[in-house]
Image 1 (cartoon, rainbow, N blue to C red):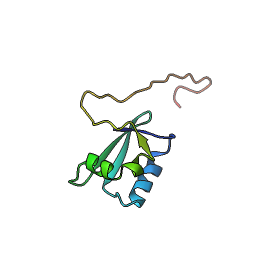
Image 2: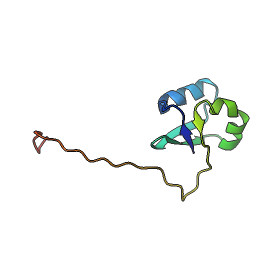
Image 3: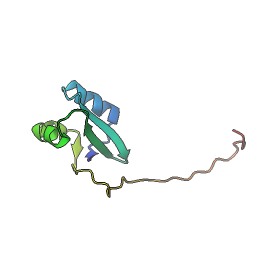
Image 4: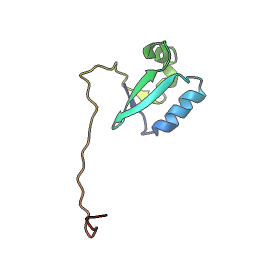
Length: 88
């Protein structure tokens, strides 16, 4: 897991990572600015990130190994709509 720097779009980050030749890295948003970084190959993600640390630090910060007890930050929101018919 990691935090995204500068609130950049996940799709944009994924495209830039693939353009750099890391086609086996997948980035998934898990809440707020936190992302899950995983590899579709047999190579462990931490090995890939450590080998190209300077490149990945351009997009991410606060790298943490995923654990089951780690919960993503969640936000809830309530809002009222006035003048909208119930059946809409």
